[in-house]
Image 1: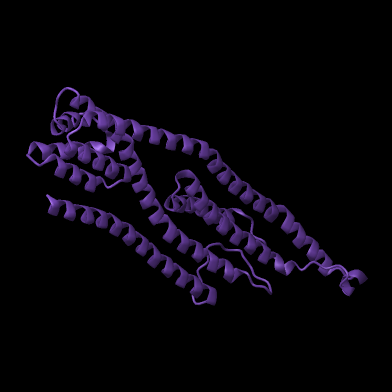
Image 2: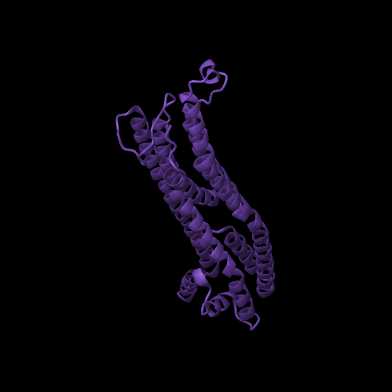
Length: 320
């Protein structure tokens, strides 16, 4: 029994961690390739551009635009796959832990009719517990084939490997070994787990307002940039061109001048600000939502895609 216990947990846990690390390493490799392509584009070795019509000035921001485009793609390659994989796993874990109190309650009810713990688990396995159903049926099959209940619970714990499952299984095993009233223990554990889940759900509902504020503020930031790029900055370019073309004394003496050649640099600063806000706000949204940076990577991916498409394909091109 102890050899099974010692061998099962590391294998399941290491396999899960290996998949996550594997996805992260692939994302880092793809991101590195994109960054290399970006520097080659910046140096002029590659002539590919994402958006035609941009022209540089003496400050020449166009190669920087191309470089930042590839850096955004590199960030997406790193954040996106790992963030989605981890978020999906966390969602699956939450689904399992949400139904675990229901299973414990059914086992406790069966135990009150005089059934032993293995018999109660087998009877309760006839129910439906969402993503937990298959693992419960597998544990019940092991018990029917004569596997000791302690070992079956250890295997169940190692396969699911969630914090709540590990804690619950440890309590059940100790209560069963102590020979006390397991049904009462299961009822208490089920009630406590349900209360904890309700508290977490209420916290998420209350924090959803702040999550909405983050997305709305990011959208307002994008709209503000669009207004400036579509109205204010073009007017500045027009005014600067008129002053430059003027032959009046004020213009020739330099008393009045607008350095319009630096306006594309301002637009590039807007682009960088959108990228920084997307990543930072996305990470903050994930921490507020579920307290996990991995979930924040998924939110950052959404914001970064929206911000990049908005800045590169919707905001008007500024021709100086």
